[in-house]
Image (cartoon, rainbow, N blue to C red):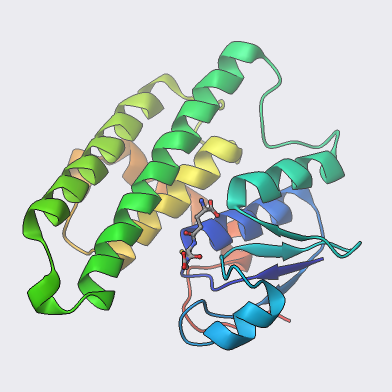
Length: 208
Ligand SMILES: N[C@@H](CCC(=O)N[C@@H](CS)C(=O)NCC(=O)O)C(=O)O
């Protein structure tokens, strides 16, 4: 199967790291939704990254849905806990991390795609507030070790560490690292794991 999208997208990186951690082989194609829009359209007319080209031909999009499929392929191997309360805690973390990614992307799009005189500061401030809240909640959730010990590479750790790195790369200085010691420690540990090292945050790397 082929994973389409750039590794500076947290959604693409989340999928790449997770497929690696699940032991599922795939080919990565670094196609950009902006710089190579027409090429992306030929693969997926909706132009959403990540896109997964499945071996039987289906064009699948959305990181969470792609990972749902990946979990089915990899079973019994899984990045999700089986117990209901543990699973709920992980789902909450993943939801917060995805919200943090979405709010980061919204600010980046507002700043980079909209002409300066059309940017609406109250809207940006509202998104920044939501973004900070998502990381505040994540920081406090990690006090209860959702998904097991911090040194377990599961869905919660992958989503949170990928989001944290992405926000700091795209919006440096927006979050105070000292206010988020658990996320900072998680990120430092996760970025050193084989699955993260194999699929680093990167705007240009081509894995084929
Ligand atoms: N909910 C989606 C979000 C994916 C997403 O928004 N990806 C961005 C790249 S970071 C994208 O495709 N942007 C192009 C567009 O939406 O037109 C997921 O989890 O995969």
